[in-house]
Image: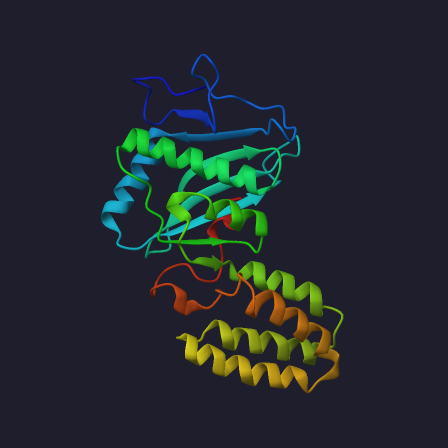
Length: 249
């Protein structure tokens, strides 16, 4: 049900990207002109995030879409924060009809407004961790709280996609690919990263079986907006390899 004054902090309530004439969340029919965007949170969850912002100088905002939680096939989006202890703090769940720029923008924008309304403060987003999805990144960039935040890649997502590209290759070649990617992942600064990338790309270039893969990897994970998958982009102790939303889902 929708939020009402005096609701128990532990009781979940729903919200949307807009309201109907009675002040309740408007639930679209899922079509392009009326997308379904329905958020679920509670005062306790928003209070936890507000307290987290007071305690922690740096937080990673995690955003992930899954189909596993919905019987009707609509994507379910989870969002939350991790702290320096790598603890995941859920902020809200969303059911959306499509994974487009509009749905992502309306979803996080709606939660930012809910948070500001009930906590009397803006939602603080230091960095974002997500998947290599253009619609997701474009939608987040349209939200004021996320417009200038660095966008970190879930390293599990990187390796998952790499595996699909090299699983037909011999074990020794796959091992060389994984070793090179891990060497780059654990670099400590951008200068070291470029040095390691130079060495690794030369190794791959010397094996004709990796020529197509090298072109793909450079375009997708080096020279694109989804290149921040190295540990030096977040302080020590924070989540770097996996998006905890994957575990939550």
